[in-house]
Structure formats: C-alpha cells, structure tokens
Image (cartoon, helix red, strand yellow):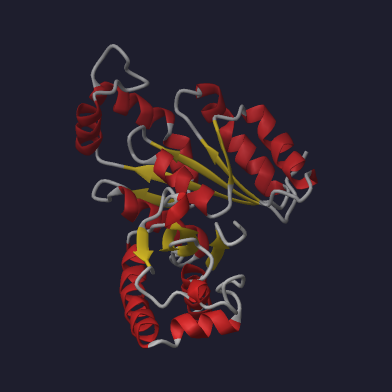
Length: 289
C-alpha cells in the first residue's frame, strides 16, 4: 500500500536526550498529526488511512525509538517503499554530543533506556550503533548540543516551513466580575476607561458596536492607551517569535466583559490582522446578562 502523494510525512529520529519530544511538540504546533513508536509494518497502512479520513490528514510526524530495534532494522526498506510510491517523506535526525547527553541525564536523574542498569555512556554508544541507518538516510541533521528548547523548536519550524513561523496571537476579552481567564501570558485591565454602561443608550450594546467602540477608544484615555498598548505588543511579539513560541494569549478585561474590554480587543485584533499576524479573537463574557 503506497503513500498518497498529497501527504507529507516527517520521521523524527535521534538519540535519547537529544530533544525528540521537543521536536515532535514543534511539529504538532505546526499542524502535524504526531505518533510515537508505530510498528514498521503498519506505517504504510497508517498513512493511507490518514489520507482516507475526512478531512484527509496530510501532515504526519512519526517518531523513531531506538528501543524498537525491529523497526529500525526494517526502516530503510520502509522509507524506500514510501519514496518509491511517490510520497513526500523526510527524515529529521537529532544529534547531540555524548557529554551533553550524559549531563542531561544526570540533571534529570533518569536512566538511559538502552542501559537501565549500566552507564549512560554505554547506552549512548549502543543507541548510536542502532541509529546508524537512520543517520545515513537523514535529510536534515540538527545538532542540539548547544540549543535550548526554544532554539530547537525554532530550528525544526524553520526546517519544516522553510522559515520561522511567527507567534500566533489569541486575544480574549473578559469581565473581572467572572474571574480572570487561565493560561494568559499578558493581561490588561480596561477599568480606567470611560464606561458605556452608564450611558442609557449603550448599556445593552457591546463593544462590537461602533457607537460603543468610539465612546471607549476615541476618548483621550482610550486613544492614548491603545497607542501605547500597540507599541508594547509590537515590541513583545518579535521577542516571542525569536523564542519560537507558537502561541501567545492576551487577556483584556473590564468589569463585566461587555463594553470596554470588547472594544479594545476588537481594535487590537483588527490592527494585528492588518500587520499580517495570525490572530484569534474571542469574547468570553459578552453574552452574559
């Protein structure tokens, strides 16, 4: 069963402790369907089934583990079969110096999977021998010796996309009355801005309405703060990009989450979209009574 030509398959191989989990997480952030330790005889069938799903799964990442010796021994023939079928497959190998791997194992107090009762050094040497074929077939080898987690994610992203992927921004408006949202990197309080709630004709509207947005954002405070907030976000996002951060969530709050926070969130979302940044906008509490 050959691989459909429309799919893209990335095999991730490497020494234990070299960063395979980080690489797989980066691929998952890029929309790849990630699977660890799939038996060799099921690879071609699995890829074909992905193509038949609705919608088809066209980005697949498969991690190779040196503990699966039967897979590694048959991997060259699996790769040849997939490539012979016209599939777009690539092999990414993560290397690292023995000294750094040993240091990482000492710091985490883990045992090497191929040397559970012996030294890490012996486990690394055995693993290098088992992965020799994967190294020889690799399309890209990344040496992680001097890379931190963020740098490795950026390298994997750059390899897969041909360039680094800008951080995706999620904006969420909310009301402090109902609690702050979890898992936000940045949070801003809009309760110092003019409040449309106290204007009878705007009380039942939301910050998505122009009359409300103008009331909030065209005030002296609103206009000044929006400009300063844009400057701050414009400064921060390239730093997140450089760190290889896939997503950043920004919370914008006011008392009830209906007027001021919504207007500010909409304005920021429109501005980021004009800059070409991928942005998601959500209003958590705008429908609350």
